[in-house]
Image 1: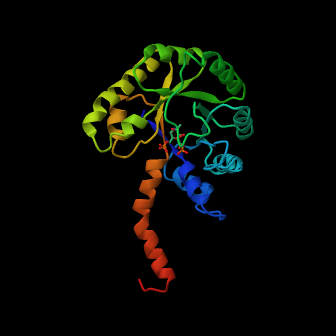
Image 2 (image 1 turned 90 degrees about the vertical axis):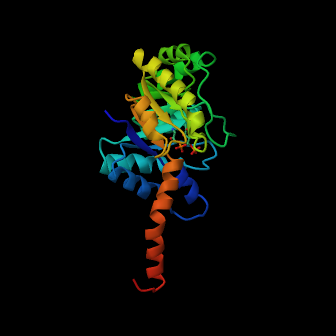
Image 3 (image 1 turned 45 degrees about the horizontal axis):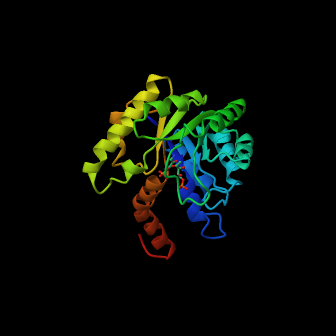
Length: 250
Ligand SMILES: CC(=O)[C@@H](O)[C@H](O)COP(=O)(O)O
Ligand SMILES: NCC(=O)COP(=O)(O)O
């Protein structure tokens, strides 16, 4: 089965937050994404709410429940008590636990499963009591032992951190060994019954090789590159609309 696409709305929320105005609307862009064929929506609320605001979560929950039953809500983040309360309130189908510090600009590494085994085991159990599928952000370095420890937490999936792979956009020759390490990590996970997601800096250009190397990839979550493409490919029509609003003919 092809990998499912979950559209990450953090970048849309970040643009909205530049002004005290309700656009671009996280709800409206989420609706367009689901209507266009995305399987779900992803958000990564951070404690300072610099992208997604906590108040966005019930809006997205209602959008899915009211208009797109069967689509999935994926909430990502570091499992503080506040984060776990947000998950309890929004009832996401999937929670992806990410070891990011509030000061980090964006997520840039997976969990150290040796160091955080007990903590993750406890949090995974709490989230499963809420009825959520749980995925753990993981480095794609081919470490099969780390993958076994991820499975031992009780998690259902790992999400491969694909930032280093995405970073090869201008030097494709560097991508091959990184892709192979991601593939080996996925092979190790799938062999022990852990499903595999992937995300971070994925694009239309780098996705085909990833899904070819990991044909059983369950889901990709994509925000930054997808939002950039939406701007680029939507710009011409938008300028035409504004020209008409100026009273220009055509
Ligand atoms: C876990 C991950 O890679 C994404 O959630 C990423 O952190 C998106 O969030 P930002 O776009 O806000 O960095
Ligand atoms: N889990 C990764 C994600 O949701 C989106 O990451 P990015 O495409 O914004 O880099």
